[in-house]
Image 1: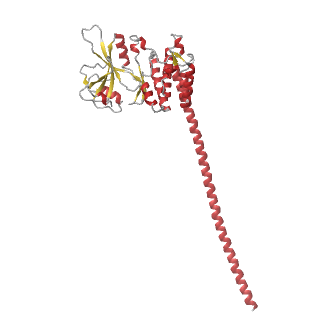
Image 2: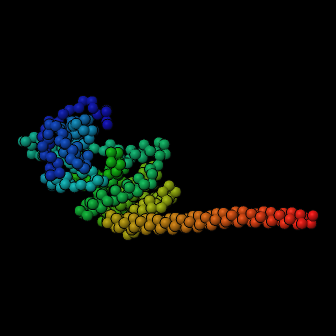
Length: 370
């Protein structure tokens, strides 16, 4: 899958502590058999035999492979306090298809050290939205509308999941949302346990105008705006940061971008994204309100589909009736024709008979005269 990573692989010999009941805490020598209907990802995360070091990305992050599978994990090494460990422990229990969650951790600190250093493992996805834009923009390969819609549905559901737990993301960028090529999903990583450690990193790439004047405004609505701008960037195949001038949003340029969006994706995508990037903080929904809007849109689409289905059924019935009437008319015309043909034959026989009678009478009359 990633051939360039096979060079210099190193087997991980330290014990891995798996901290969820979902995964087998024992690293086995031979992969177990896959259970019927078991999710392939869950299977690989619980049946691997060892972790193989693939490559170092930075001094604190590396890529590992789950041997013997072609499944890759990212490992982040840092000093972590007990509160952060508890938060990571909680997140390993979460399961959402559009969230990149922590999987397990490894204590790699010296036993005499005063601080604890941990390796934290989570799924590795190599393709983020920024890279996807660069890749598709080379050939003006716009994303299909259905894929954009699935992105809206999936990301909003993942961030709704977080909002219901009282967690805002607040670190949304083009590089924090990934495209999972294996499952064809757009996924976002929750890094909120480290908010206290690096507060300067928790700032959405695309800021709504109210954030420049009111620091206490609704952070969930900030996330809605941030995700909306990220999706808008992908839809237009351009980084929408160019509509900011020294950090100030240029409303006219945003309006121009939305007009371009309307030409590419008229209808539901345009309508929903306009709501997400609404400059009025009061009108812009949070994730709970946004989910209600999507549900209303879904019901509306179902209603339209039912109307279309009813119309099609009525048209089909009318066609069947016309075909039936046409067949009946054809049958009647055929019978008339047959009867007409029969009538013509009878008349001819009578004419011939009359002709023979006339000939006989004529001969008899001539004979009597002689």
